[in-house]
Image (cartoon, rainbow, N blue to C red; front, side):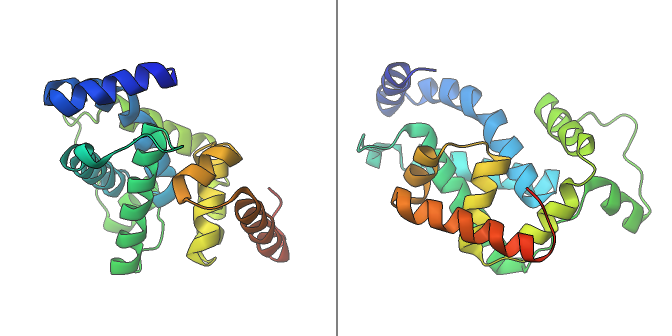
Length: 190
């Protein structure tokens, strides 16, 4: 979606809440994929994305175009929701398979996850070292977690990370560099 298309949809959604569904459809799977990669838990990720869209529609009237795209605003809300969740629960990332193994439960055969969740889970399974990296990143201070997650899990550019976090390019570059250096101390190569 181009920035102009995004602007039109956001402006339409401010006057017609039904138009918000197009924004939801455009960004839901991207945010869910990012949240699953960041938390390692599909259900928690779905809750975070749900809360993100709830806050977005509730506060849409406040959104203004100030050098930040609507998608960056959504990622910023999602990022804040994840910070809040991690602070409250002192959560440790765990893969879906490990959770099933730990609890001794099997998924119900007649239960179908949404297509986006299946895609996100398949993406997790493709990368054997994903959980290892995720856990190592989770051990870093939150300021490094945010930039590393947005860059490598969210595949965001430096400019997008700056918009999402509201930080200067120099600060983001520095946080990325320092975060990678901290991971290298643990003999991890990105």
